[in-house]
Length: 79
Image (tube, rainbow, N blue to C red; front, top):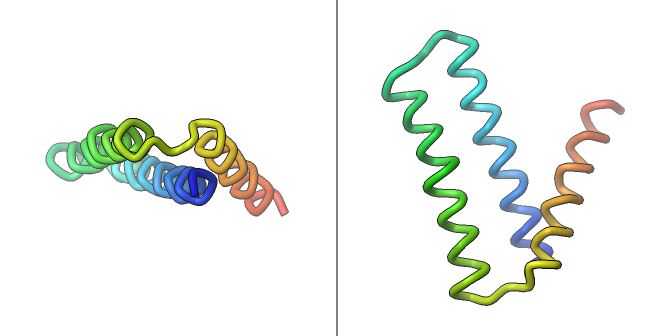
């Protein structure tokens, strides 16, 4: 379970970071940029803490899923 949740969290993290960078590149600052930063740092990291602390998911499974999701994204971008 931790592997799947870690992989999904990693993909959501990358997607949110992509949207944040797009806001910066387009010059859209203010509430839009603040919303993406809040979603990333408060929402995603709060969700990670909830899964790891409250639901007691395996940190090793979480990290392996997160790492493999990033590796998969890197391979798909270069291939």
